[in-house]
Length: 130
Image (spheres, helix red, strand yellow):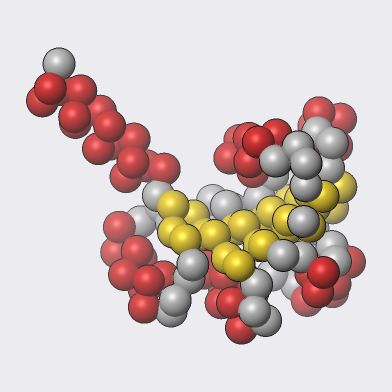
């Protein structure tokens, strides 16, 4: 399956590594991150803005089975997730701020991940149970 990942930072890179049997396309704005990902990953890496329609077309958005938006911006992730959802894609989006989680849910985003919240809960459980 073709998987489009918006955000080539640590999370995007780790997701790409975890999907070795899929065709991965990463869109990342930071040229240094683009270069690193191009050298380290078996993925197509495009340097640009994931919320630009021309960039999505270049990335093969129409053929993607899943869109994963894991940039550092909740607003960017929401906009891309809504666009992908409207086009019938399976969507996974990162949310950093708690106040946005309900908004993502209300818009029907398939899967919402909040690494910061998950890490906080894991740490709190260690304090309580260890």
